[in-house]
Image 1 (spheres, helix red, strand yellow):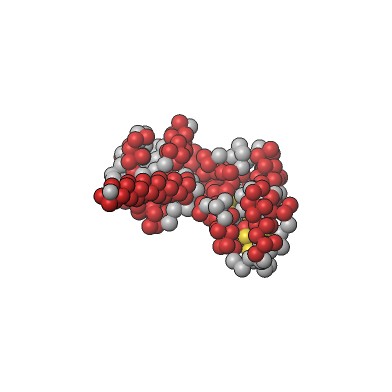
Image 2 (cartoon, rainbow, N blue to C red):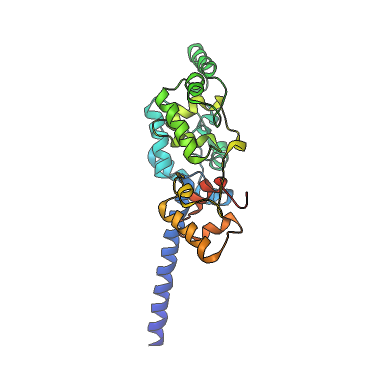
Length: 265
């Protein structure tokens, strides 16, 4: 009977370990998709080997350690005619974080015929760079966005509307969250966009009203309830880190939301 109990306990422990592995795997994928992997996790997830990113099969990207979502973004870029002519072209893919790129960069081997651009291609790139004018995205009005980034008025309007909901942009990658303005359109204009984080409006966890919290794109109705109820039952927050005690706040969400939170301002 004691032996049976030991075997049963081993099975239970094995099951728990398997469940924990699944949980950790899902958590890491969420972080990876949001660009929030730290160096330690990235080293665990990314398994580099020498590769040419141009038309690399999906399975090869998976072997490198990228997620389905990241691979889809790369394939969409290629489907629209995108090519990787230099190593740093892969860095322009906002689906791949700075840390992941740093791990992959030494292993990138691009076939020679992509390295040299034709005179016509160089001229097109030069015109594109000259086409867009510098702009600080947190203070620009709709007309200036249209003029300097050569965007349709309705896209400029959405950029302003989303900026107002967020309280300002703290990094240019957030512009890819605007409906109708994808990462490829952003990549073309990236060099022209400046982000001054001094303009970001923050929410005081101890003073923000229910209405102010719930209107923020990164704060769900349930999370708003949690924040307000916690203030009532436990008193004031001492640190923004305390909201991570809620199961509603993943590491990826806190990475996105943190720059908008403050205590006592």
